[in-house]
Length: 312
Image 1 (tube, rainbow, N blue to C red):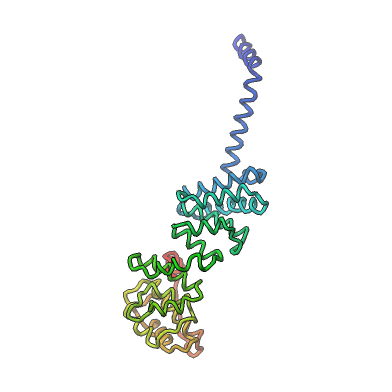
Image 2: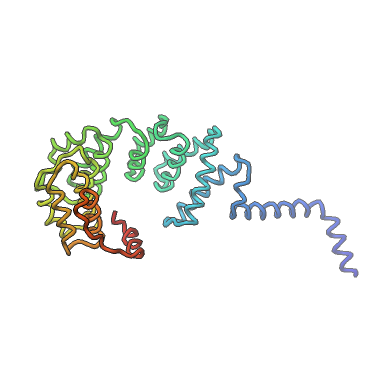
């Protein structure tokens, strides 16, 4: 009984000191709980916008392989940042631009921020500061995101990409990335590529097929194109073979007879996978009802494995 009185007396004496500490600890615990769950989304915008920025950064840093839960977390964080930009919050806008200018920041995080900017302002409203980020960046991943998603002045990127496409010292995949971008967005690419003889039959390499596919009807193939391509496809990857098949489909309407015979040859060849043969059969059946080719039966699990391997 005496010990209890001593404790009560001590608590009474220190109540003004212990009370604030208790409520402070309780507030910190509630704050941590709300941040680790989705309760933080109920905060006022001026509080949750900086939290969204940090959560997005942490997700990119910790979850390089982003699946369902991660994708949802990033979507929520980007949504808050977009809400802040739409509300006219200049602090958020300047923080995004400052982060994009920092060469030490991971490009994946920068791309997440660019998705926010794209959602709010669209592809055309690129402020001078944002254009300067693109022009001063040497990060290919970031530059290509800019080029594929924003309407940039042609003069701000074309010459650099043309130089890269012709640079024999670069890896083929890096040159091809520039070629594909030029084929997709450079209105003068056809005449430039013909002048540089990029698609000469004897020089054609399989990765260049995608550039031809992007050009579609803006590039006429030689009548013997697919016949000469066949030996290279025998040793090609599944993805390269499929690009050739889709290229043949795009040239059927041009009256290129070799593309039709090529698709027939693919369908009949045991060298090609059941997937490639299926694509060829569907294209020919759609082109001419007289074909009525039997589509090889493929199980759902086989399709899932095939698509997971990025063959399209």
